[in-house]
Amino acid sequence: MPRIDRLKSVAVVRTPRVMQLEGMFDLPATERSSVQINAHLPLEDRPWNIGLIVGPSGCGKTTLARELFPDECDTRFDWPTDRSLIDAFPPSMAIKEITGLLSSVGFSSPPSWLRPFGRLSNGEQFRATLARALAEQPELTVVDEFTSIVDRTVAKIASAAVARTVRHRSESSMAPKRFVAISCHYDVLDWLCPDWTYEPASEEFQWRCERRRPGITLDIARVHRKAWQLFGKHHYLSSDINSLAKCFVAFVEGLPAAFTAVMSFPHPTHSGWREHRTVCLPDYQGVGIGNRISEHVASLFKATSKPYYSTTSHPAMIRHRARSPLWKMTRKPSMVSSRRHSGITKRDCCSSYGRITASFEYVGAADQHPKLDELIGPSPKRSRL
Image (cartoon, rainbow, N blue to C red; front, side, top):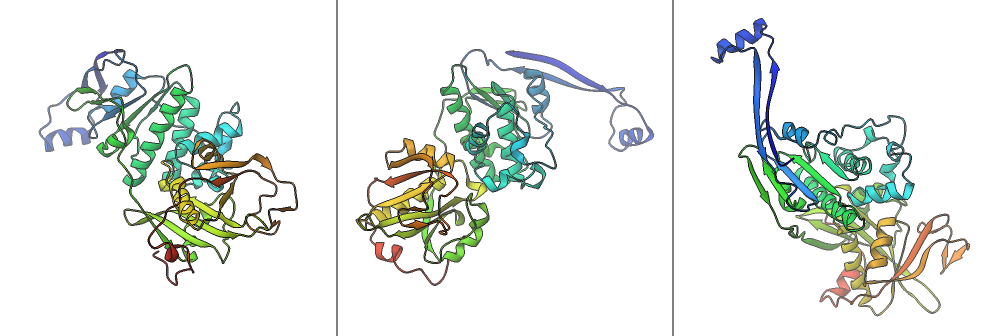
């Protein structure tokens, strides 16, 4: 529908209060309130994946979207109050599809997936709604009030995550996937990277070429293991941490975003290091920060000339490492059945018993950091947090 010309009106019941309001603000007496919509959006001229209707409140964004996409514009879902979040997704979806979709929009916290929607934070609810909209409207997803209920850091990170998801889903299927965001916030523009934008206030439509989102600068520092208190409840496996772990935190603009801990890996012939914990806070999930700190820390310990290993059951991390040239898969996803595996007992809090996991060795370059001894040496007495 390239052009829309509509006159939308609604009856005004002239109650005493309405007449008082007319007198107070010198409004003309009227029987109807009308809004004229004139818009030209040449959406059929080019292929596209992502669009953004943006402008201040009251400029007609939602009204226009309902005219353009009448069947997709309502993303208000019924969420069960007594069941886990994952049970709200369509019955036809396999659990791997659900968890993969949640992870792809930056909601990679399995402990939170077990809670009902109403018990999640605003940021988690926003991302869960995005995932469900993509699940139930896979060909064309329209989200009104995009990022309106979350702070601006979450808004930017989530925009980048959903953009990557939509384009990946489109590239991996025969039919194009389309996503339209409706928002009053212009700060998501560079992170969502839409193929087109429309501003109802100025009636301006613009095609845009695909651009790289803004970079995210990480400040990764060695910290005391007490920093784990901030991250533990978000880890998919356990809230415990070994007292001998060497801990690191990635900061974004001075705020903690992700955590990685490393342990010594004793072995008769292949002793080295192993990743003990890696977790990214929910507000920063979906743009690769967790993988980035994991790989940076691995490169530091690789500089000791000892191998660096990691075992994980997180689907998103397994997928990333399986494709990355920085990691070599040493064991395909499977369930460990032996009571002992590489010297790690069942009582070890990192044991992979009862879970499908995959094992990897870091094969990327070593980081010969000038302060390497300080970074991987004894634990600091104080934490930056």
